[in-house]
Length: 299
Image (cartoon, rainbow, N blue to C red; front, top):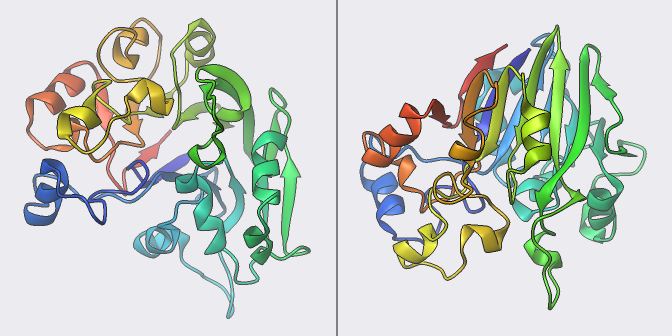
């Protein structure tokens, strides 16, 4: 199984277009210290020819351009992207669907809760009916989006997308609006969870024994954005478990048998983004890799 991290940043990317926080400023002035990153997305293949895109980032056009394996190879119109899967309805995971509208056939997979939010917005009708097939996927039901690649979706603690929040927001409920994906091919297992509000016993049990985990790395500490002076929301409030601190993901997953551990969906205010920083060293000493765009795994 081949895995490519197309985009490793959280919503807005790095640097964010209007942000002058220290990390965004370094990404502009010293990219060797802070690599610029695009918004969250990965691609997975069992054979290296046909690919499953998981989450359609607003930066998807650039991501596909930057990765030669995703380039057209046949005739006048072609794409090795045969299927697209959504793990939630966040803007940074669905806005790229508008770019994938040039009459290219593929199948869009998502739970009914996620697909309903896409179907309710008519702007997504640019994915022409009869060209893009929208397919509901039930939780805990294995399906094969590509030959040789099996995916099972499972609920993880989360919240509804920001653009669907009401007056009261439930955070931490495990529903079909925030899911993880267990991806299997050639006897290997990859778990992809770019958004998670809490590492509970169910999450730990699910991840036990996987060959690789790509996991929510939005914030290092719950108050990253507050420390940076650019926001008032905590990680918990945004529906993202911090890496460190009480109930943080590093400690919560420390006793689970996991092969490669990789943080993805990293917010621009997270200090682990700085190469050579004490925060990066701390995370790496705990056995984790901080993803960058183009990171490739061979399982």
